[in-house]
Amino acid sequence: MALLDARALIHALQQSDTPEQALPRYAASRRRHVRTFQAMSAMFTPFYQSDSAWLPWMRDQLAARLSMVPPAPQLLARMVAGTLVDPFTSIGLKEHDWNAAPQPSVPG
Image 1 (spheres, rainbow, N blue to C red):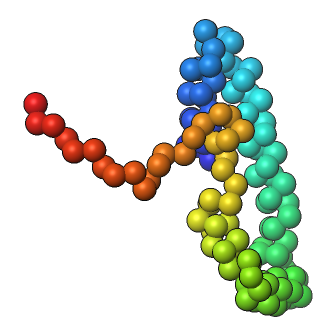
Image 2 (cartoon, rainbow, N blue to C red; image 1 turned 90 degrees about the horizontal axis):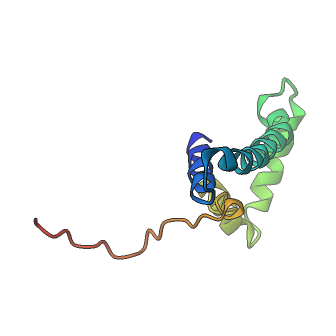
């Protein structure tokens, strides 16, 4: 989450004339990030860190069956890779194009 915060701060500074103007933009972006992570944690923690025997069993049974039904394998892979939702879109950033050909370095 630190990298996401740093990128949000950089973006807010680039979009503002002064640091004082950038801080409210950054704060709003930070609140969205924190709320998202809190909601995800609240939803999934019981299935992974509960003393219950049936919650992990239910998670495993459901995940095993869903993972075989298209398009679930692709969605699960994108979720694990972190590409299902682009966290930078809401703050106006674009992800680096990793497929672009590398530029040759010029000796100088």
